Image (tube, rainbow, N blue to C red):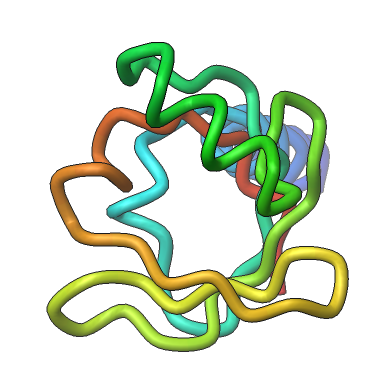
Length: 95
């Protein structure tokens, strides 16, 4: 009984730690939510994204993820190309 309980506890901790890892926005699945941690693009592009509501700390939801990404950012839809989405680091929040 104790080994089974311990095994389940360790498996849950591994799943929680894997879920909390940061990743590029481009790998987030359709329907997932994420918080923006860092934008490693040039200053002009970062400024444009901030004007659209996409900034460090913002929560986004991925609406579509085929050739690029269609995001829901504070009620507005923002489309990003795959190359731009790959330089934005996010923290996945789940569905």
